[in-house]
Length: 103
Image (cartoon, rainbow, N blue to C red; front, side, top):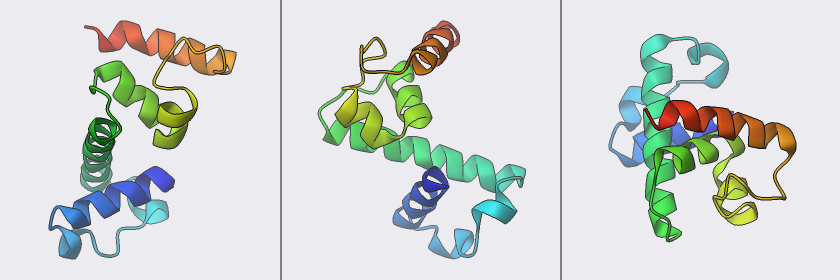
């Protein structure tokens, strides 16, 4: 739900407050158009904040933020998918995703 809220806030910053007013995670996450719009806005938010934090956005880094949450990915794991601090299951997910993201 936090990602949904961040996506909605990004849409509002982009001037789409009236359009997304009232969109709620529980009701609208299954709505194809609305969930896609919120997801794409969240990805734009991740990229913007990654640049602010001094990182170059890559597919794998954006996915890492999407999967772990921005603060954890950037500040705890330094956008390093091989970090020894990452739980093994997260490393496996990121490793598997890297095969798809590089295509």
